[in-house]
Image (tube, rainbow, N blue to C red):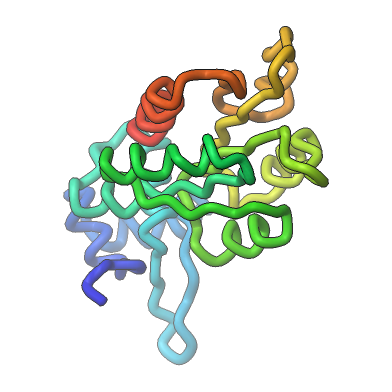
Length: 187
């Protein structure tokens, strides 16, 4: 497996053009999320956390790290939405699909996507509860959320107020959905 999942403080420093001690200060101040290895206590930084830090601080994201953050979890059981997978893959997005809330929770925790696309028409899923849970947990602070609102939902502002980054109608064109996803991933 050649994909990089964690960085050392030295590697993070080279990407930022700073001394590794600066990266350690960012970690100690809580600005950059990292964990310590047992023994010597060296820090390791998850690529997703590092890319989020770079974006939060308006720093350029290296191409080899930016591609690691183009992972989307699509929570839907609609065949039309599942068909969007191919369009997203053609746009360079890695897509995982969950058809129920249990699978979605497991994939959210293990695959660490950069974006959650939530179909609120899914049986047994309360979109507002999902948004509330995601926004109150620090490990999902950099997760973008696109809500697919039910048809006939005329007030999409309440989804944005609840924590969604963007909202599209369930009846939207699949190309519009893919465009909106790409826009959020590149932000």
